Amino acid sequence: MSTENLADMEIRPTIGKGSLTDYRYREGNNRLGLWLFIISDSFVFAGLLISRYYLLGFNYHPDVNQILGIAVTVMLVISSYFMFRAETLMKFGDIRGFTRNALVTMILGALFLIGVVGVEWQIAPAGPNDGAVWSLFYTMTGFHAFHVFTGLILLFVVWRKARMGKYNADRHWGVEAAAVYWHFVDVVWFFFYPALYLIGRPII
Image (cartoon, rainbow, N blue to C red; front, side, top):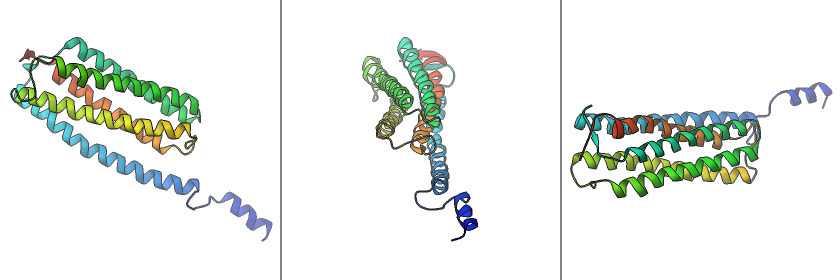
């Protein structure tokens, strides 16, 4: 083999199963799939939000605990900040920084779940069978809580793989996917929180 051919092989990116070029191609397909899923999932959340305004308009909201609502919202917002930090650190190859920030994200996400399902549901003045308003409240918060729970599972898997050295600055699609999904769940709550806690007067 001539020196010219050897140099050409070194410059030209290798397209194979383990090559970076192949990884970027699969990453693009995965990214498209994730966004299609998020868009489709958004329609379900939008349907729930529309149902809330159809039933209560802008005059009423369920009689829920306002302090708790603010507390869990702050937790989720802060968790999104730490998730952003975690993803950014991974882009620079800081595995240790990623794992620390991802762990904080998971803790805050778990506290959000405890606040909504473990506390709010228990102290609410009515149950899911006490009329359409409360049925919708439990459906909206429950569906969102399910997404937070699945987000925590995804984050834990990614966090564990990062500790095992499965990701680096060039190859960390799992981290990006977890971050996008977590921010999506956070954005949904930005719409659910005022609809369930702030807009209108409380109604039992």
